[in-house]
Length: 450
Image 1 (cartoon, rainbow, N blue to C red):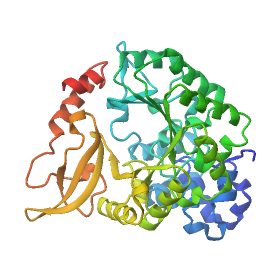
Image 2: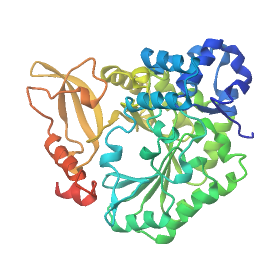
Image 3: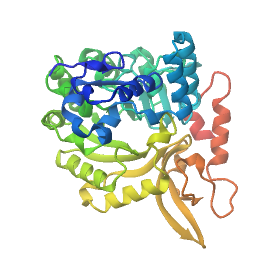
Image 4: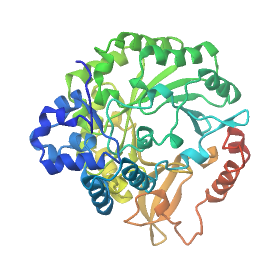
């Protein structure tokens, strides 16, 4: 299949779009001014049920919905567009809306960007000691855009808050100076949008550097869901799979971190064949998704998805909470409901599927897991723990928050039992102070000494 992209500029070319009313089409155009819209012919032709598109999870996942903006924001933007406002006036209002949507949550800009020789390195994030995120500049788009995506600023032209790097020598120098890093996560956007020869330049630089500390290369991608032909019929698909095999043959574990939001994305012949080809390179495929209202807020959906993933040779890895960014008001599921969805899905599957962890919040202090709801000393509480933390010794320590049925995120919680703060808050505040020193952001040394 040959790839064809659809955006807000040409989405009227989609044959099935005739099923939408004029108002529905107009809503897509309005919302996509704020939240970028892009899909492709595979998604349109093979994943969406056009006979029931209004409630179809794949349609909602790919096409902006009116309710993703506040009614006030939608109406004002519609008014500007209908009344012939200038491009500059519309752009200013769009930017105002975007800045109210928390474009970079969890301190990604302020607290995750490291320094090399006293200068910030755009294109790298180093939040946890062992894991470094790498944003290759050529991979900062996707085959299609998820409407919930927390990296939406990457696609909007907000250049001052965009991550990207195209200098492999600086990447290698940073890895040499930080030997505690064992895992590199290629992310974006989607690195699998890149041509194989471009990806090879980065991979070869890592392999040729012969860094004994590097044990795992991860590639975060939605390509298996949105364009499995990347591994089947793209002109460089064989070259790409050979590159995967090269990594494995060098004794480095290759993990494809595949984003699947619904079992429908696992149902086509193309994704089954692509999965087989990736696994034949000795790479592992680990799966993850946020729990999302309107998409997968159902225990049965998750149980069916995990079972199908295991049947295909994948490893269920994470259920996330929807990040506090973008259209979270539309997609967000409160903590109690997310825990209920996770637990009732978990008990439906066998032990082989129970590699999955969650529900997890990737918040400023770290990756916090909602372990349960309990009553302790007569008080109803959330039981929480860190899966990853900015300080390593936070990991695994249980802590307790006062039960709140309206809590959607860590910031909504207060400590249980009359405590004034959670156990990590003083150290976290110190880390934030360190990170705000001129020319200095969090480093591995800071994590050890704070």
